[in-house]
Image (cartoon, rainbow, N blue to C red):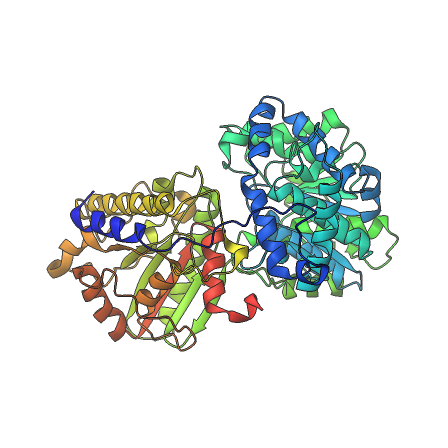
Length: 589
């Protein structure tokens, strides 16, 4: 490690860590009801489930028998006072996939809410507050409702523990049970359920009779859990299929699509391919989407099929008029039956347009600073992010804003190949790259919703230093060839991305190619440096760390003097959540 980074590492280890996890309380020591209903107390108690030691041991034992994990989930559900049969009342739409499943769920929920239905929506992860995961009519449940239902489930589980069972499920399992409880108690008309990881053995898959299922785009992710090939991953995703329950998928690569088809046949599930979004449109009247990016078109098509199927099965007459498919489609040999395109009803079209899904292809304009925010964290989603960002950022530059400096703010978690992800980001031609952990502030004043007890400050900082090393190596490779040329090999999906020459890539400053990256200990310091106080709505105490470094000092001048700063935040939804917490205070209310 270079001396300056070693010094930084030592300094950061002295910074105060996030507030520690609370001790779990026994029934005899729990505070009075009025106190335990407080939201933050519920969140702190929920956080203790992140590192439940007995659960971790249980997972190790169950690793070779994933079916046992579902059996354990059923046991926790029954101890909470619910039966699997109770979940049939929720009229569930179940959605899995590697990328786009959250956006698909958001489109679907908005469409059905436009029909006057009371909707439940369970998703993960949350960005700012954990109650975002459980929504009623598109809004996170209130802090009061979260506290109320949290303690109902928590107390019931604690009261029913015995020597033969773990006292508490882990974090995600608990929230899944709580979501079922909330939706039943609040009497929603339907629940849109996003799979956590995989499908076959995901804890959401204890449901028996969803109304309809969906599979968004597949790719490589969570390989230690789902398998190291896309075919193995497709097998896991197809595990949500149910006998006689219709399912839809978007266009997939040949091999995983074949696996999905075989899974559907084995289970007895009618599986259909969604048509292109353009097939729903009449000439001269296209559909407008509330979410940006070409990749959202397949998510929108999937959502239309899911919503229409649900509405038809519940007797709604106005669900879109069937229309003839485009002439080119019958000539295509589809490996699956092609679902019929239809003219979306007014509530459907309006639902697609009104959909909001924070942290995905989101743009925030703040004075001379433009934030481009996308939680892409797989190879396929990062490619889609690059296409979206390059076009959107170029449109801004072509509007005549003057000189522009581009800054990448990046982090990635888990087992992901960050070197590969960073290489995919090269066509964006950033002037600076900033790396930081998914920690909003090092002072420890961040809210409990964003605390993660499964990692240490030292671990996440080391990951940032590794990411910086990968980035610097990529920059050196570029400077050794043609710094003004495209990154090789050129991905066919990125061939239409506009080329840009970064401000730093001039003959007189070419040496800066090897040192245009910085590491900060938290998100607030990273944003403060990237924006140099030019965001009128983002106020952060001055961060003096690294300002003695030539990159930081010269970059500060450039960032202060340029007409516009474009900041792309990507690599992790948790990073995106920390950024949004700092930039939009209303999300913490």
